[in-house]
Image (tube, rainbow, N blue to C red):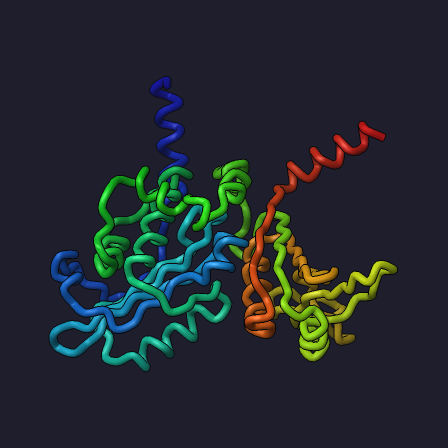
Length: 317
């Protein structure tokens, strides 16, 4: 690589340096000391949401010898280069303060569920390795005090990425599609926008009729959208238009379309155009359908791949 090209690449990497949000009182306490504090709460990404979207939130809380709490939050988004946000505090008075803080910051963040600290470390260190592969740098003055609250993770970034990308953890197909996106192009996407990644997620239904009843009961979030001759029932997934996404349709009760679903036999298929909404839809389906729903698999396609497929189909005609 020429010196000129190398310097250009270094400038690009520096431009993609993370500037994560972080509470003002994150102290630089050695990781060895932090890891002696007992874990009193741990949340990890929901596995089904993660496998469908590469999105998830996480939290670890440790209790210090003086009774105060130290916590770190990591919002993980593979499409965004790994970390959408990270923040924490090593001098928090109580769990209620943490809950109130999380409620104000992570209202629209991907979901998380109770989990094991070692599993959380596997997620976070794996995403850190993914970020390095994609050319993102981290401000260690911010990240290291937060990572110090996680269990130690042996090995190298290559090992961490292998842990993250095992087939039963993160689908190889998802990583293949994400790698097809140019990191520099992703940097040009406005902060309030998201690049298209078409997702199709398939679920098994134990009781399809009960699922239809529940979806109909959750209008207008889930709206019936017709039935085909073969009995396939269609639904749309919507929300009220956000304040920063005004539409004239909102004056007439219109809602923003986030995704769609269809039920055929014992299979529910959900489709979305961006990964964050895929995660949101999968989580809502799990919330309202419960044990009636079981994640089966998912597939993804970038806009370029979709266009190439359309051109190929056109040539076959």
